[in-house]
Image (cartoon, rainbow, N blue to C red; front, side, top):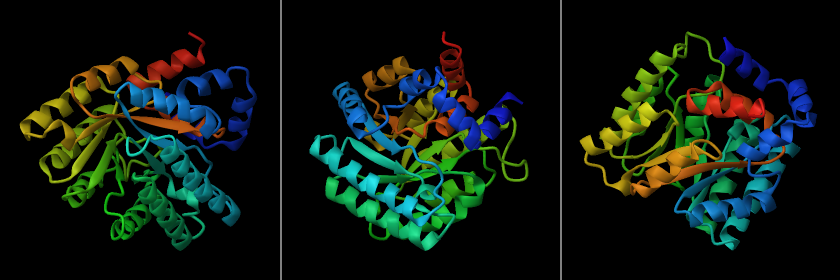
Length: 305
């Protein structure tokens, strides 16, 4: 019940404004978000890369409700890519993009064109783009845009959410040579008709999907903080004789930092998801709704402990 309350709250603009103005808001954002803008995020990114980690930068933006907002997000990402290149952070740093922030719900063709422009800028910067997953109503559209982008930019990454019942099938389709796929549990309020509801069923789906990706010809990106699933991923990598550079782990900035260091010290590729921006409320609430490690850390932060 707590999880669903958080997911419902994550979509509330009113609660987001209240949280941003609350005394505790900056403390929470500062722990899990790398500042309000690129100038704040770049030094943090540099320190992480110097520690042997790789990065995916994400500009936190609300779902776009106008063409002007979509253009502004596109331009923010193109500027970010220029800054990453100028700072010498590429190719260690890539970017993650939500198509809804590029106007996907307004005009899919426009969102595709904006994503294409960002992919061109990423190629010029010497790095890649991953399309973030959102709620299930956008999954088909997102995958269609992904396949279209991959015609010119084959390194464009996908994100699949294990709690969706369709995801094991999607993994089979995407586990092809050169295909970069981030597998996560999922963090939106979804109906039972399309998504597993119990933590156990979600974990089982995650492992089934992981087996498909690890046994395939693509590049799995394992996005979880769950110690059991990390251990299973390490085991599956051995099962399928994957070299360290043939898959990676992805963890959130500010969460299980010791585990990030442990995995990297063991020779694994470890990518830190590094968000920045003032629109942090929905991001933090969705992370709080996840389990197990993330929720505990965020709850302690919210309680000031």
